[in-house]
Image (cartoon, rainbow, N blue to C red):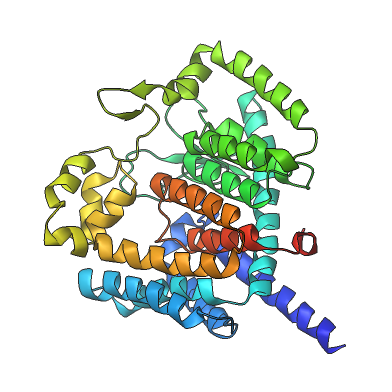
Length: 382
């Protein structure tokens, strides 16, 4: 009886936390209330986390590392308001909540996310074929963008002429590709599980460079455990032939895999644009490399998003303390050495593409991935 009540309590709290994490992904419905929503969600998340702290080993060390990173960034580098400090401390509490709450929160978040993405795909197809949907113009979430968006019932589209890549209810296609890839990797590329095909389709039509790289990584990592893997290989072969010979799809997908010898990177690697490389090289080897220049520096490099920008903002100290916290957590949870190495390869790939130290949803996804890579009773949570 007590066990049932405890499980129901965890499910209820996980449901609430899952909704809060989803809200912090900032779907288009919430763009206009971002400034109000942030402190409210931070307080609620912090309260839930502090009430459900894990008693497993090394918990204090994990919290100390990540909390010190955010205190360093907000108090010593940015001199932020107390609201911002509390918001960032909520991030530091997510990695130390109880294991069962992590899984219940993920279950709740995934259900909500898949539901909206599935409706978005239907909406996207209908808009693509010319169905006359009601929509209204909304301002961008990122004020640095010089264009507005058309918001349909379950879809948002940049007002830049053509329909373009799929971004669901978010402001960037890369965002939907990143979240879809993280969840598919967490699910071990199991396309037989309900909702995973929706995530796969969403990532494909988002034409996210990160998504395609992550799927290659996932297939290599989990191919021995996949059922009907030859069917997937056949489908991939057909997909490559069809898209490679289409000019638009070639430019959108495959040209981004071409290696630029002069730049020393793949064409799709656009994370360090807008002069960020030069700014990063300027502080390399100086004290500013360790301390950072502050968040306001990000406004000058709106076209870039990589670990270099994080170091430029809050220094290598911030990055190192975060990585150390996640490293300790992964050592505790992932006992298999091969799985541990696989996790870190994928984790570093993710950080390079879209470092998520500043987002509730991304911090949660990193923690969830660690638990998913380390879980032994997988069936219990599927």
